[in-house]
Length: 181
Image 1 (cartoon, rainbow, N blue to C red):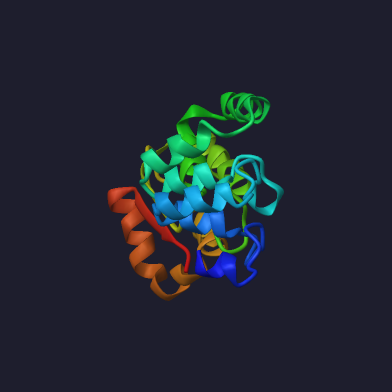
Image 2 (spheres, rainbow, N blue to C red):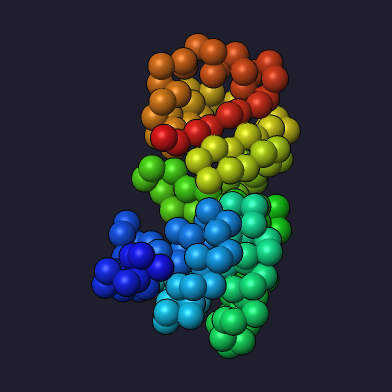
């Protein structure tokens, strides 16, 4: 209330996020409700992405009650568009979209595209997903390990510091932990 009383607009953006998105991601239902009452747009998507709404921020942060409250106020046409988009995605990688997993240099779509290529070549299983990390298991070890390691390091530059350990993990355990700061 204090920010609103001092003239902060409920739609003012910071790093492509509105106060509503930030409050939803923190699970602050009372603040979310106050911002919506003050005119915050529940349909607005971050970075022009119709999926990354305040409801998405709440759900991906583990606040389904806030997400449900917001979803009930969203435009039904937008909800239908979101549903259609989700149906076009490879179910194997839906968790990445649900968490908005992205690297420093690649969007979720680009990351999923690379994972689909790896899945065709090596067979992969996603073991764990967060916004900034991803655990994978390979069904087969890549024949050209140097090329694969180069792809991994391009995706996750911090891996360059542990190239030998990475090679061993891929060859012996066929597991990968990728992260982005």
